[in-house]
Length: 279
Length: 214
Image (tube, rainbow over all chains, first blue to last red; front, side):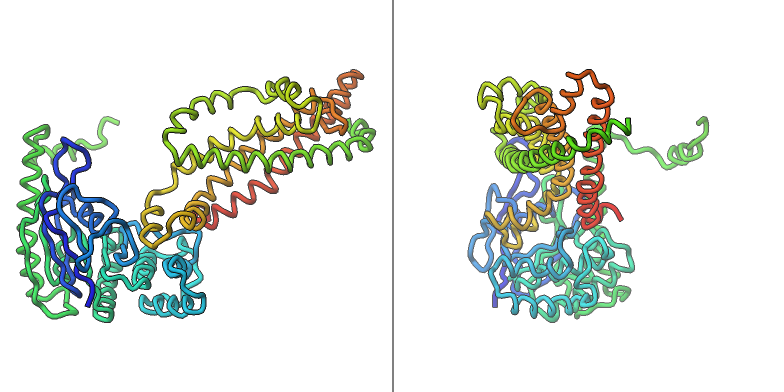
């Protein structure tokens, strides 16, 4: 079984002298495991995903996929981006087909596999639509199909549902669980939403910001697929949320000491009362 | 006026053909050159640092200023005419191409490499189509420069085949105001027609495909 993704003691900073975006992080994803990294914005979670994707190189540490070092982006580590990254000059089907075309697979086989991938994300009816004719949720489903068709060892997802409305997001969670169940892929998923993390993950990793480090790891042994409103989920969400709130408060305090003092709520109330008067 | 146009039709027809043939050939050449230069400047920062500002300077040079150099290099020939046209429009195309490539969202590059598009495949399947909206706009800009340069060139350069610019100059020689204005009108109409009915349509199609307009 393939799909063992390991980040071992990785550190990354964007320029020398700056703080570490991520520092000495070790995350090991077992084949078929669903790992979600969650943390406040600016904690380095996207950096982590880009390291796994090979779009960034670590300054220290190693990134391994099935014991081989990751050196560049490639189809065995397919990425689903937050801003979908689909090509607007192609139809949905052509977008899904593109990776296979680059692999040099024959047209007839490509057609079959595209049909199959679109069926998996329930988009067979929209195969010939252009990207701007699809809704946000449909676009992300095309992006998922485009990634899955490559039969990657791991699926890397960078806040894929962050830009969707709540109803669509819930639907996408259900479909992603379905797909994960059917394909048994290793999924490395990054998000700022605690609810999303707890609902989907086998293991949630809470990051610590400035510098980015692992703050806590929580294994979630609830069976899949999960009910979003179950009591167990709510309890774990509460635990993770406390961790994150601590983290956000700590970061804000740090920033505040430097150049910003938060106003008291009363002040804000008065400010709101003044809004627009005197225009 | 209308009478002047009518009297001119005999000469206007062939002259228009000569000018349009020149335009097609010259514009094709400067499109290829301009695109190439634009892509090189975009791809190699060093080149852009060295030549980018110069290019902008050269672009501000009115295209008729290339005429003397053209005559000295090629004599009173078609080549000299092409030289003026190509020099007058290539840099405009190169600059807008380069600027356009800078605005291609980096996500296409990330997505493309992730899907295994490398080397030539990347240029062919990702960069070329991704820059289509920009390319369409640079086409429009390049055309207006090309047409202007050609008319300027024809006005000054007297070659065996007579284009519209030559008719304009002829009007001046005979102090025939009607002919001068009539030829100018034809020039404007050609410019407008190509832009509106060809290039703007093309641009619109590309933008519609990309979902930039509905």
